Image (cartoon, rainbow, N blue to C red; front, top):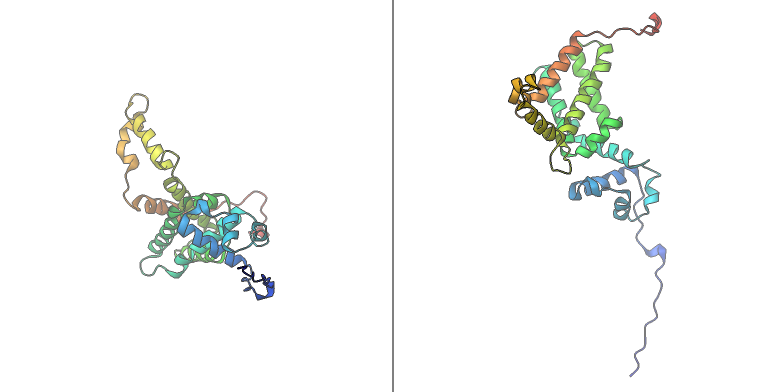
Length: 239
């Protein structure tokens, strides 16, 4: 008995469900999903394109490169900071809480922290963080000129701390842990390194966030008391 084959009827493209329009926000959302499920090393243009059912080349219409993508991911992660505004306490305490939350985001994603050291974030959540820090400095009586430079120092300190302590090397240790091991070895030679030997474990003291908040206090003390000097080529009209 010969079985008759049912002829295959081509499916028109018009009958297929339309794909959602490709957008910058859609790309960032897909990247965040991959980041949380698989880690940042899996967040590639090719992987995002596969999730969005498109070609990798199409993404570059909305995202310049991987660095730009990481900057957008950072901004999305900072949304939680924007939603949880510190309340109560002095302006210094609120500022330290804000910077600590920012640093903790970067601690979780050290690769993004490294990116933030070389690329200036510019998304809306980062701008909100920047504006809140400036508002707190203003509340503390910091002059506008000093606040404009001081906010850069504060964010740079938080970012650098996250890079140092959150980035694991091939050995499995962070940069801070490797440095600590080297310093401990040097401390055993008091003749060559007398002051390292003298301070000993004090060089590594500071549990939890104590060392970080102390660093913020040091920076704030300097910002409050150190006035910017006018450059020689600055005219009174530009001051």
